[in-house]
Image (tube, rainbow, N blue to C red; front, side):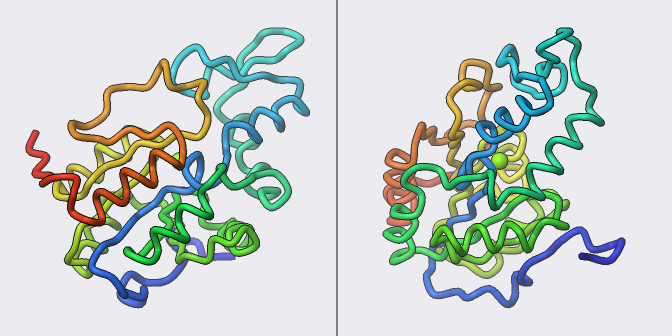
Amino acid sequence: MTGSKATTRGPRVADLPCRHGALLVLDVDEVVLHFIAPFCELLEEYGARLHFDSFRLTGNVRSIATGSALTGHELDGVTERLYAEQEQRQKPVEGVGEALARLSAEADIVFLTAMTPAFFDERRRLLDAAGLPYPMIATERSKGGVVAELAERWQGPIAFADDLPPNLEGVRRSVPAVHLVHLMANADFRPHLPAMPKRTLQASDWGEAEGALRRIVRGDAGPNAQVP
Ligand SMILES: [Mg+2]
C-alpha cells in the first residue's frame, strides 16, 4: 500500500530503460487489458447491466429488476472490486502480446494507467503473467504531465494510445508533437465516442494499432504539429 500522498506508483521516469529513440506510451484499461467486458460480467453479479446509450458509465448502469441507475458511489465500488480481482477478471486484449513483442524491437514501451495506484501490485502481476513485462506507471496525475516528462528523455517519435478522448486531448495539449492513437477494445461505445483531437489515428483492434504504431515509430506517420 501507498502512503496517503502517494498518487503515483511504478518506476520514476528517470529510471526507465531508454534503449530506443522511439517510445510507445500505452493506457492499460481497454487498450492492453479488457475492462468493459469484465465490468459487465461483474455487474451481472450485482443484478445490474450497462446500457450503451451514451459515452459514460454513470446513468447507463441500471438495475435489471427495477431499472434504476446505480449511483456514482456504487459504480466506484464495482470498479474497485474489479481492480482488486483483476488477476481473475481482466484478460489481455486479443493480439496485444504479439504486437508489443514485435514493436519492442523498435521502440521502448511504457504502460501509463490511471487505475487507482493501490492496485499496482495486482496489475503488475497480471501483466507479467500475460507476457507483458513492460514498465508501468500507475498515477492519479494527468497523463499529459507524465508524457511531458517522458518526452524529455525520448528524442525520437512518441506515440500515446488511450481509449478515452479526454486523455488524448490532455496529452495533445501537454506535448503537441506526440502522435495520438485511439484504441478501445469494446466496440459497443464506439457509436457514441466524442470527437477526437485532430490527426488521431483510430484503430479498432491490435492488428490496426500495431500498423499505426509502427508507422509512427518509423517516422512514416508524418509530422505531428497538432496546432489547434
Ligand atoms: Mg483506458
